[in-house]
Length: 295
Image (cartoon, rainbow, N blue to C red):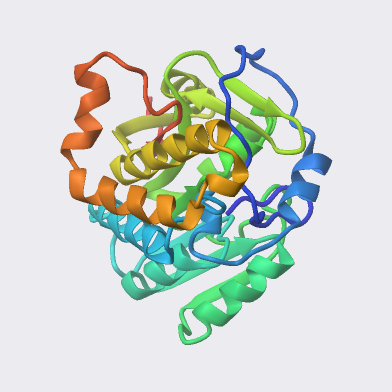
C-alpha cells in the first residue's frame, strides 16, 4: 500500500468516486489529509484493494490478488531468481511474500505501523525478506535492484514527488533491471479527489510523459483486467447504494451476488462496455514495465 511522509493504511470505508473536472498538471495533494484518512487501518486482503464496504467476501480480494500475481509473474519472468527486489509501499505484505517465494532477496518498505505489523507477521517465515518501517520518500536504497515494485503508490504523490522518487529509483536499478508500476488510471484528463481522501488519477499518457521526464523508457503497458472486473462490481454497487435506502441495501447479499456474477460472466462481461462504446468502469488500472532509457 502507499506510504507518504507519515503512516498510511487502509480505511474501513472506501470513498465515493464520482467523476470530477480535470485538474491542473501540478495539483497538490494534501499529505496530512491523506495520512489522517489512511490512519484508520484495517489490515485485510480487501482493504489494500479499496474493496471494503461493498459486501464482497474475502475471497474477492484473494481472487484479484491471485489473478494479478499471474500477470506480475509473466511480466517479471526475465528477472533472475537470484536477483534483489525492492517493494515500496508494501501494505500487508502480500506482494512481498510473493516475491520472497520467487527471488533471493526482498526489501519491503511500509510506513503505516498497523500495516507494517501485518507485513512482519506475514513475512516472518521468509529469511530472505527484510521489512523496513519507513517513508518511501525518505527511504535511501543502499543496494542495486533487479526489480522495483510500486503497487499503487504514485497516485498518492504530487507530480513533482513522483518525479523525485522515480529519478532516485533509476539510479538504483541494475543494468537490464526494471521498475514495475501498477496504477489506477482514467481514460481522459487527470481527475482528483480533494476531500478527506486525496488522490490524483492520471491517464496512461500522463504516466508516459512523467516516466520520460525521469529517464525511463516504457517497455510495456498492460491493462489490469482483474482490477477492471472488480472495479465494475464496485461501481455498480456504488450506484446501488446511491439509489436504494440504507435499510434496503442488503450489502452483504448484493456484494456476494455481484462478485460471483462478475466471476461467472468474465471475460465476456468486460467486453460489453467496449462493444457499446461506454466508458465503464470510470477507473481502470495499468501495469507499466519501465527500464532505464539508454538513449
